[in-house]
Amino acid sequence: MLPPAEAESGSGVYNAKLGMWVFLASEVMFFTALIGSYIILRFGNPEQWAQPGQVLNVPVTAVNTFLLICSSVTMVKAFAAAQHGDQRWLRIWLLATTFIGASFVGVQAYEYLQLAHHGFLPSGYREGHELAEAAAQGGAFKGGPALPASVALYGATFFTMTGFHGFHVTMGVICMSFVTWRAFRGAYSAADHRGVEVIGLYWHFVDLVWIILFTIVYLI
Amino acid sequence: MTQAKSHRPNYIGIFVMLALLTLVELGVAFLTVFSKPVLILLLIGLAVWKALLVALYFMHLRFETNRVRILVIAPLPLAVIMVMAVITEYVW
Image (cartoon, rainbow over all chains, first blue to last red; front, side, top):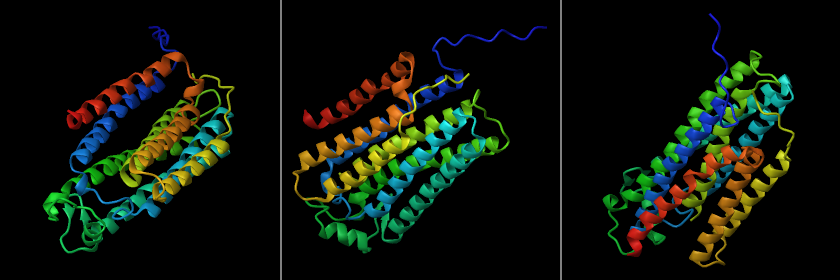
């Protein structure tokens, strides 16, 4: 029996890439739902939000933002190396991307632990802890009672948005490890490096989402 | 297979630009020069600028076929409608 004839791509791109773009389009709506909810909650309850830098550690997050930008450039360099069939640099750049991506997750875990340690949780501030005091002195809670239950929105939205993003980065690191392992086995060539391109699209999208989240959650 | 791409953006240049824009964002956010609405507009403008750089050059949208571009642009109006719809809750 003859193998089936190769189907012609109607969109002009190969299936995996088309699939990734469709997936990313759905991800746009996913993160828009989170950001939309954040906006409506913040507009409706401005007194619950602390000033930028008062509760959240902006310097640490700025470093993390820089890490993610670095990982995007190492990813795109890996893609360029794959286009040229340069196996050595493909592996080096992929390893670097995986390592920097994992570092981002590590720094985020550290940030969460620090916030929890100082009393900022998804359920709100822990009464009596220093971040609750700092936020109260800095003008948060103005016009509202300074009870932990009343400030749950800030913590809940912060941990939900950054948590889902962190989950995406974690998944990206796992997939990137797989692509890196395949690269070490010589799976990609100048003629066919689809896996590198597709994981790259996902990776840059995650970077792009962080760019928006960093501004909305940490700076505004 | 993979489309042959003759376009090679200056990736390091884009990276430097992204890093600089991040520094500008931090500066703008913590300078007490701007009023809150101006600050928000500036910060969102800078974030959109950075996001566009990533999408156009790192994700190669600038060099993609129109069909792919349409696929990418399609959810954006829906996203704007969704955010606008929830914001109107506080306008009316």
